[in-house]
Image (cartoon, rainbow, N blue to C red):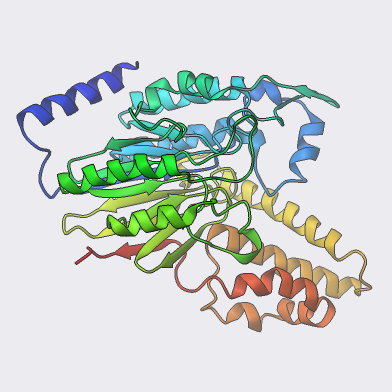
Length: 413
């Protein structure tokens, strides 16, 4: 157990025995999802790996070390009460990636921020873990649930009585705020993209929420898969199966906020007093993380931020945005290849949809902004490819009202 974690637990025990933490003090949690870290030796000097990445959604995994160094610097600057990582820690569950990532988390703890993790659908019993050579690849060793728990033993708590609720647990961040981490990923016998909230999860989580309620503490839940539906075209395999049971439990015990990820898109959904904030994937531009603050008047705020330039190498954010944009552009070009579109119109359409994708994934698009439908590029899409426009951008444009980077949730009366 790292020295910093020992000091943290010892201090918590002393404070618990002597007196409660400072009443009314703000509690801040920093949350990150979808790091998709890959150990450098698995991709260095591999042209094949770059080809594979260009077929993906804009992950800039070839700079995994730079991103983790940026996260280390950002946590040191912000000094949150905890850093919570909600799954897809690794690219595809490589054991070496998990081991190296755990060292990064230990370094973050040594700088003063406790780290807590749960797995995502890419982390355990994966069948897609590879090591890449210059022009070839081979399978890489992965981890079982027990091996995952051992590697991250300093960044998880064992919860008695949860049985088949996977690697779920909860942490009392302060007297005022508890973090509840249901592990809803499905990886028995092999990793699947969907999440599942079971009767075992419900029994475990109800006992935790009851304890928080009795202690007079706010409970915020953290999952990898989405609790609420966010977008029509990314619902199946993204919103967890059994979400109805978790929603009902959350509302019964006054949970206001769940943090999720999985989509890699920065998006906030709300329904009947419950908010699910899907923080953008840390692995893609602009490298989002969330700050959750329980204020002294019991207001709960969620704010999505991007890694600051000060935490990254010079020009990194611009490089990352260009990487994402180039992938989005070429995928759109391929989708339009069969249509007889004049060259100048095609380039205008690609310019538009690339800007749209960057804004949407970053949480910077809002359907309240009329500029997107007044744009000349939008009119080109309407003219030459209305079916493709309505299937994607048209759907998105109906699903992003308001600010996707910030929510303020007042106390429940």
